[in-house]
Figure 1 (cartoon, helix red, strand yellow):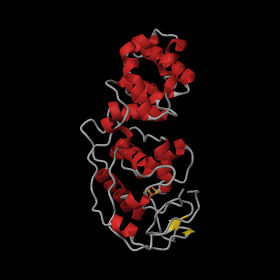
Figure 2: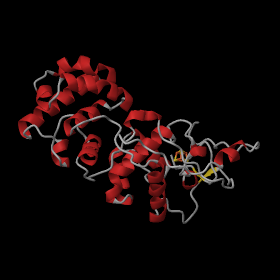
Figure 3: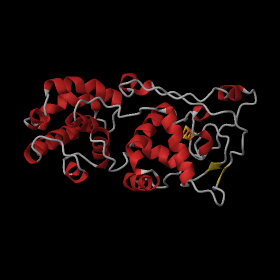
Figure 4: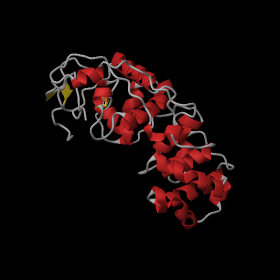
Length: 287
Ligand code: SF4
């Protein structure tokens, strides 16, 4: 649905009401963090039936604060209940493999990356193997992930620098990670948060970008500013977890087009302008 269009009202047949009587059920991620189920997962936690409210797009009412700690805390609580154990969906066995997989995931699905990396890491098991390559030699192996020329340059360049400057070990701090070719804050945050368990920032991918705006946690359209905004309102110890949960949410329910709002556990906290179902007021700037 185009943004700004008035969301669909509950059906008069009561069809939606029936659907909404389903109890909140937490999604159970498998022990591998959901990797085996890839993008098919999560489970929708359905909110209890609530009375429909006006859904005409409008300004947020005076006094409404989307960044109020209680609201943010409730969002985090519901996400944790819906996506327990959410973690990075990219398959990896060490920090270097995660760097490679994250670089490959740009403009590509995690499913596609996970189909590509097993053979890639079998062929080139170590960072030294990648460092010894010319970028052109890597291109055929990663072609299916798209943008393979740039990705080859980034991966081989990063491998060379890790071998030359960091003793073959992926650095565990933001500044050194950002010095690697092809590594920007998104990749650095994925590696620091997922592998090194350091909350240095918030991963802002396409899902986090879209959903943070829908939830009015940011008004910005720039990933760097979005990350700064999120770091101000999300408690630091939740930064990595929040990213993973939102990414799962973006795949399962809060998809880019026609989000599944009737099944969303955040529905009555969300005033997004492009909701497909709403029991609360719509805020035209929440997009
Ligand atoms: S209610 Fe809809 S738009 Fe809002 S977070 Fe849920 S799925 Fe996304």
